[in-house]
Image (tube, rainbow, N blue to C red; front, side, top):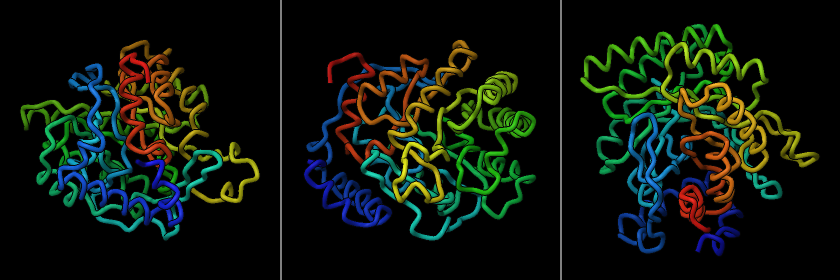
Length: 340
């Protein structure tokens, strides 16, 4: 069905279509029609950070920033859901337009800027959700918080999200919050993750439950930076690394007019870079820390390749814009080694 309505959806502004699509999925779910249109595909069970998954295909953060559509999205057949990025205080993000499709390259450019209703609103939405599966909460810092105080924001979000998450992702790789990627430097990363791991230990004792902590990194890291991330992740005993976020390198778009737009590029053009970072991390970590592969998954074979490169699970987002919910079923089958 999606290929038939996509041309109509693509006639409208990307962000307008984004909200319309999510609201439509919500209404179909409430009417009991979503499962009929997109019956879940039985996949191969997996384990991620000690968490059992019905399949290894998850939803990446960014689609449902405020946790408003968890139940409807879960009904599409994801093995796990990640919501956010959320910040301590609500913030509007960057001015519109800030989301652009590049159909010629099966790509998306976004400079959303962590627009969200704040961590308290996210928690309320999660509490109203009926979803019982694995739920990740992706946390970040407010744009107005100085980078030297970034840890304060992450600690606030970690503490508030802890009781409601299956795992928590530390987003230090969005290109749309000023200086955020500086936190990927070896010293900065070690300091940030160190204090978050200390807080995690305190919260685990307080709640009687250990909630894993993942970190999401950029695809624009060189070999030395990838090695540093691997080293720090091991030293700090991080529970997983998500590779990768969007890229600031738009050379793949050539002379396309949108190549000059600020923001992160996702979709097919980021696939090669994401694969490379994933492969290098897998080689250096050698199974000691689980990896989640993200970036450029447009077909089931792309998801299967992420697993072959060393990922324990994958996440999709931009591919849904071009393929629709059928991509989920295709990836679930491919990751299970079934024909698609």
